Amino acid sequence: MGERPYTLTAELTYRCPLHCPYCSNPISYDNRPALDTEQWRRVFAEAEAMGVMQVNLTGGEPLLRSDLERLIEFAHALGLYTNLITSGVPLTRRRLTRLRDSGLDAIQLSLQSTDQRVADNIAGLAVHDAKLAVARWAHALRIPVTLNIVLHRHNIEEIGDIIGLAERLHAERLELANAQYLGWALMNRQALLPNHAQLEQARGIAHAARERLAGRMEILFVTPDYYTGVPRACMDGWGRHHLVVSPDGLVLPCHLAHTLPGLAFERAGTKPLLEIWEQSPGFNRFRGEGWMADTCRTCDHRTVDFGGCRCQAFHLTGHVEAVDPACRWSPDHHLIQAARDAAKETSEQAPLRKRELHMVP
Amino acid sequence: MNDASRPTLAPKTRLRYDRQREAFFLLWPERGLLLNRSAGEILERCRGQETLASIVKGLSDQYPQTHLQRIEEDVQRLIGDLSNRGLLTLE
Image 1 (tube, chains in turn yellow, red):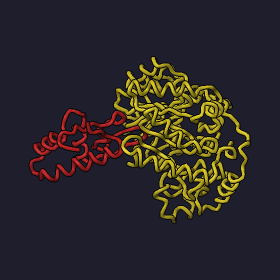
Image 2 (image 1 turned 90 degrees about the horizontal axis):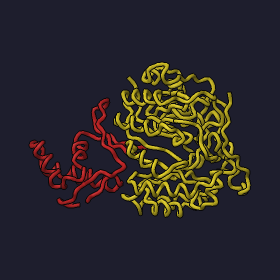
Image 3 (image 1 turned 135 degrees about the vertical axis):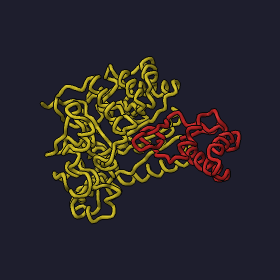
Image 4 (image 1 turned 120 degrees about the vertical axis):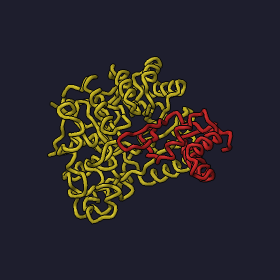
């Protein structure tokens, strides 16, 4: 028997009122019906039975599901740690209270900037003040809050202010999440990728704050793989600890795995979840080291990064088995270097394409 | 930290017994810590009811074979570490 998953990421819908240009959802997807309440309940129960302990309720915007309370209640009854990953829109204090009373353990709230104008411009909607209200309600209702800010060249210099805001909002955790350049963010990379100086400055400020706030606020800042020369251990390795179920029920090792060509994934409900986890060809495609190029298979780092990110490898090189170009030893590393060089030059005026919901049949 | 401190797991955490791995996990958003048996037993007592002294006494009663000093050291190390990480408070 191989690894068992610890975490289920339940993407309850791809719909979202916001239009963030770095959205990690796929740019296009099949227009299949979303799983209903009963189907999600089965997914939760089967996931728990196979060892999952945490469920991330995400999307799109999970608040758009009117059955969210019932889903939380059910996950909570199974003893799962429930974490709601949300933009905070649309939400009322009354509904947040209901979500808490259904057994919600924690909320991860996204902010776009500390500056309302910048924030609303990135979100494509005037929602900044509403989000701050959600953070205050959550604190008053004693729901632990993680603030999540996707960092890019338009907000990375605000990092000191972001930390200050997180302190004022009594966040337990602050994720300073450098954008991952896939999907919408890859399309907008030229406008979003910070330059090296911006990044180094932000890292210094984040590390100092981490020391200062130790024991009070957990600060996460991961240097993006575009600047480390080392691929990240995407999902902690393909099909090792994470299980993702897409809105229409595809069981995946990561939220973009179905954008890779030639991989077959299965739908929840058609087979036992455990069988899909263990036997689905898509899951087994990049488990272990057999699939790796020699560059990886002979590298000591392979047990640390598990061969990096397959989606990044494919979306940059066109080959699913390519060495992740973030790696300095990748024959395609020049692609990353070129993006970094462009970031040195790029004016702030590079166009941003906002996320829209395309339904591709 | 002193004998009268009441260690309390932070609200964002949840202690959960995992029957697959037959061990306790400390869970918090998007994170989990696999606990060995003694750490699990210590944290089960960190609910804000018991003082540090009473936690040590309870464990010492439960494991009379183990040196009291060893138990004290284990408890203090774990509680100190988790409190530095914001996963536990000392009331």
